[in-house]
Image (tube, rainbow, N blue to C red):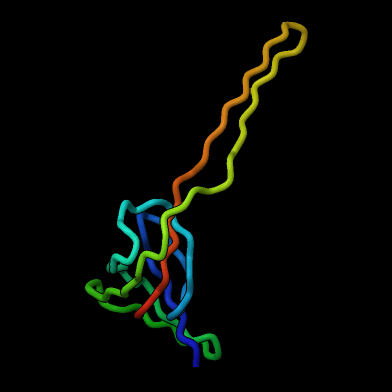
Length: 101
């Protein structure tokens, strides 16, 4: 039976299970650091039973690496006046592995 969990990191929620690798926004931790993640909900994939744990329930995750996302380009353009402006942005991301739920 695979137990899935909904965890919350920096105000965003992710559906995970033990051993999953997920990419989140940068949390500012070094590679190999263990972090605690609050578990909001637990459920099983084969039944309709949903368990909402107590507030102090914590899962464990390990930081695998810090990386950069793909570049996002934003362009402004006005016709007939030769106005063009292109800006770029690369988000800083963190890849974590869920070790315990």
